[in-house]
Image: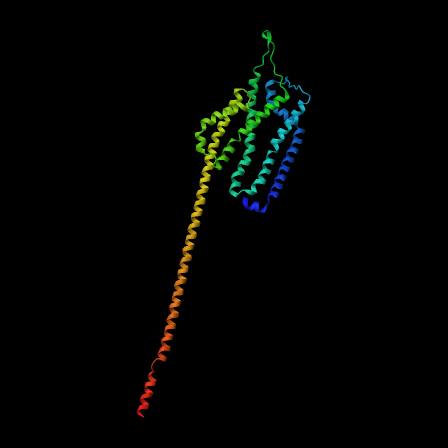
Length: 324
């Protein structure tokens, strides 16, 4: 079903009602997952703080300086986890609303990206959790020292809210950056960018990747390099995906052209066949007319011969009368 047929079947108000129902289900799923995540919020927060706890040791602690800080931190943790868990439901509802307005080839083209989006986000979050955060926390904790005769000791007293904000910023930054292949591949399918154009702008992409990593990550070399290098790798993957997409697009265009040529050949052969049949019918009609005209001519000649001049019998009767 294409967009025009779908629009004819569903007026604009029904489209808006369907969109409202889809968003209602998505928001309902978000609230349900938020309630479940808030019930397990201490376990979720313990999972997020584990990389820092492994570097600091079991005898260290985290502090909060405002009465409501821990409560709002738990709310943020629950909402963050609920967004991540309910993302497939939200994407599924959006897809269910958009899919009826797409052609079959468009649905088959966009459906893999729908599954790739949460998977790539999960890969980005896993990279920052298992690789970047331990290295970054170790780097920041290296500035602690015991003090002694030279001065006072420097020791980290991490705040609950500040730590969560930093962790969420890193996870979202890496998760969004891992969507780069999806974005560039869709742009290539739409004809906005090309694989050759992306390859020619590779040097600019490297500079932009490290600038983007410097803005999103903490001001340390480990986090910036840890985000910049994956962006460059993802950019190269995007070029390969764009080439594959362009190749499929050209193959589909060639198939369409061949189908059109076959349709034109079949229509031409049909026209020739119809022309031959028309000629045959005209020839048959002409021969029929000739036959009718010949029959008509012979009958007229007979009638003329009967009307004009005496026959042989009439000549014999005259001779007999004269003899008498």
